[in-house]
Length: 77
Image 1 (tube, rainbow, N blue to C red):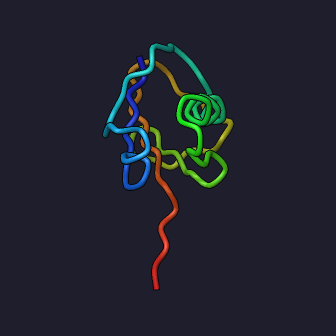
Image 2 (image 1 turned 90 degrees about the vertical axis):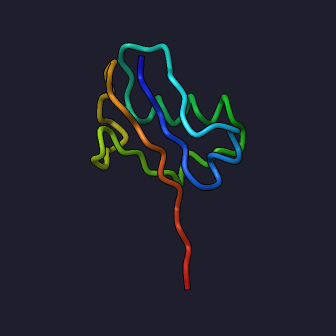
């Protein structure tokens, strides 16, 4: 299982702060595709992903036991 955390507007969109995905292996791109399919409007093209507290690239691998965080863009003045 892979644990994912949602922050800011993603927490509001999903209605939860964290979730487990029953997969042993996936890439970051597959994770983003999964999130967009499950939660339309997720914004997969603008979201960054961290794996075990380190920023990840879209072709990086996620394995069972990893903890991922979706990091939405932040705007400010």
